[in-house]
Image (tube, rainbow, N blue to C red):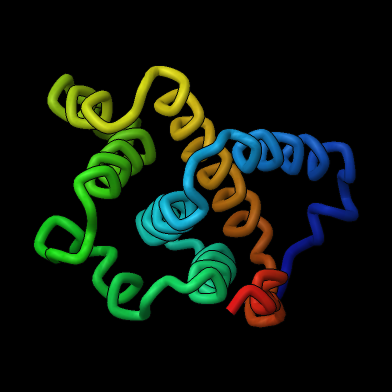
Length: 155
């Protein structure tokens, strides 16, 4: 597949709007390890190869284990995720798949057990952001494989 267009160049204003949302997510105080799991899981659901490449590289650079990344699509059956992570992943799946199913009271209650109101809104914004990035990269077929994590120096 070839890249259809470079959305960053075609509309710098749209790109900067997306970056502004991402910056707000980063300022939220949510753990970066949790955010990378959420970003990766939403990207798995949406089939966004570019975002999967980016966020698995970033997660690994921040110290995430390969096993937890490999098992992410089967997180319900894998014992290596905390209850907070499980609540976030269930919320991620529900919000990402909102067109097919409403967000159930059970999933909401599970999320609220681990996130206060502000954190849950911030988590939801993170899910909205990654779903937006997924759609930009899938629609315009952003070229995959060139991403180098700026966090590589953290290891």
